[in-house]
Amino acid sequence: MKFLLKKKYFILLIPILLSSCTAYKKLPYITEAETITTEEFAKAAKSYEAVIMPKDILSITVNTPTNAASRDFNLPLVPQEATDIIQTRVSSTSGGYGSLQNYIVDNDGYINFPVIGRIKIGGLKKSEAEKSILSLIYPKYLKEEPIISLRFLNYKVSVIGEVARPGTYSSANEQMTLFDALAAAGDLTIYGDRKSVRIVREAANGQLDVKQIDLQDKGILLDPDIYYLQQNDKIIVSPNKAKGNNSSFGTLESLALSGLSVLISVISIITR
Image (cartoon, rainbow, N blue to C red):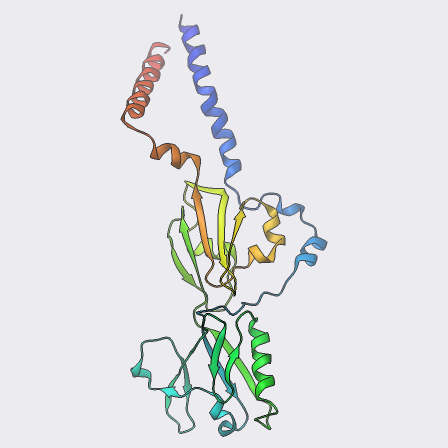
């Protein structure tokens, strides 16, 4: 009798043991990454640069060896105590300090630039926008070739769903990878589904694009459009089946589980 009870008890435990042995396989990121060849990495290599989008806040400065020559192409200085907005702190020709006003890209991708007027830079990469502004200024207006410096002041991405710290995270160096963003958000929770992560991205024309990602897929490392995030990307981590099952777990299911627990305990005592 005891032998039969032990056998039945063992059969009950088999599914639990099997599930625990395979569960770890769902946890690692980028499985089999070591199989990617050097040639594949070289082919996918891409120097990342952020693309200017509507509503971006930009700092653009024009500098020449002679400060007076480029003065008209920079926005006026604002006293440091006059604003709470993030600004670029610079010194004026008079020796004082202040903050340059910033540019906000409108919905059509345009900014109003001193002297030149309304110019379109939306959809351009940082280096492309700098070259475009340079071509409009030099040599038409300036004899000295200026240095154009463009900075993003609102480079950020949002991470929501099954992560430890949902929120919006910024990057000082105007670059963030998918894994940088997940690390900033404290990684996925135990309920995060690594095979169901989405990136919602808005193009310069306002059109939305949704990319479905499997965080275990080594192909992420070979796709720069996924590996490198654009500013204002939204990362959504879906819950796994365990979270869904727990959310639908009612009183009857709890009682049944309690009863099963008691039964297993009784069997354990009997078979000793």
